[in-house]
Length: 162
Image 1 (cartoon, helix red, strand yellow):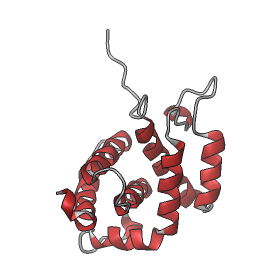
Image 2 (cartoon, one colour):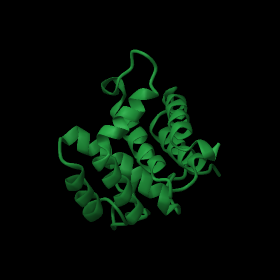
Image 3 (cartoon, helix red, strand yellow):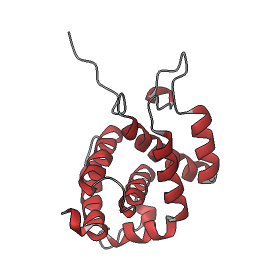
Image 4 (cartoon, helix red, strand yellow):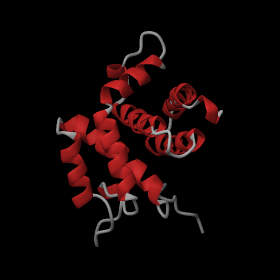
């Protein structure tokens, strides 16, 4: 019997919150709506289980730590300029934020919001979590790219973690 691929957030509420945060940041950017509007939509319609809706395939995150989700999104929104400056500082010459895939921008912004919180989880945990998310969205070189930027961001924000 072949094993079924596991949803990366199944049974892991903090991971689910991070996946939802990346999705919400992407949605806010794509729709032009404020992060607060998208946050409200996710809390009402996208987090938790609903009969007949199976999860990621239907745009739902069944298991998510709602308080972590809110913290990440609000931090990413209120610190957006500082986060974008931080991310851009760790991109290769000639690369700018607009050149990044919007999902990658969401991953880097959400991870950056967590890394800026000195009371948050260790930097290596944040990097691993967002790398799992990157692998869930991409099959090519994108996760490796994210890893390089996240590592550089973490080392500049939390040098004591290394």
